[in-house]
Image (spheres, rainbow, N blue to C red):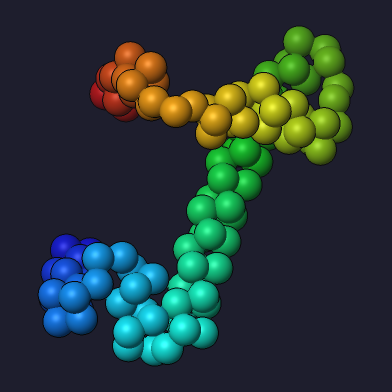
Length: 108
């Protein structure tokens, strides 16, 4: 991973661009810049969907253990609206720092 970051920095230096899309447009043309922007957006969206799916399955299992049977799709929508959307709308992620510490400590 570190070597690829080094290569990206080297291409940025060679082309004089400061963005990933910019270096793609310089080296591959304007269609290449659009393609990489779409690919990066899809990667983030699919990662968010995977994260939401894991949380929805966990919520569904927890609710089933106390006697509430809820459809997976309802759990997915609920997790997305109640938990993920508010975090996506935060302007400053500093408020999440205490929870990050707790999550990291939970690994050990």
